[in-house]
Length: 231
Image (cartoon, rainbow, N blue to C red; front, side):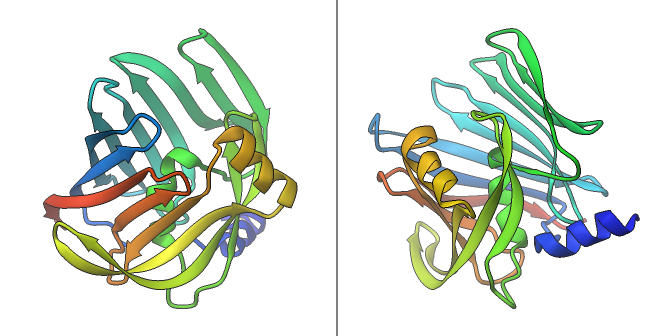
């Protein structure tokens, strides 16, 4: 491993949380804007050097997001998003950059970037690797596909909260996604997404995401655990 890469991994702060080898979680997702709810299936597999996850919306949109993240720092290798059975978006690291494929417009573009990066489609896994034992704000290279640039994202620890779920009350760490630049932070909330994001992870390893919410009333909350196999 090169000295530059080692320095990058040390400076980021995310690390492998020990996700079970075969994990299937079912969430209830609620969209405040459309006032609709649906089940969201999140399946993650340990592939040795990386984790592979499939995020599927069980509703009319038929959104399926497939992600690969490196085990050592949970950075993004590849993201493939399909909607209604059609390829919509592809994101992957290539030589000296990030390649984006737009399936609906049938075009592709490349963003210059050296080193690892993190994409919003993978945040549910990435924040599981937060240093909960020594919590402090973690800064990381965040790729925003809507802007086509890499900015400095922040993951800030907000304390411990009890979250009520269908499985009972679960004690959770709260984390907030933000950005180092106040300008970017404001633009992201007002122009790009129109909202801010909070994530809640169980305090016990392997730190499953229990609850996600935004400041507009939308949320994702754990309903049940369908399978777990460490083998």
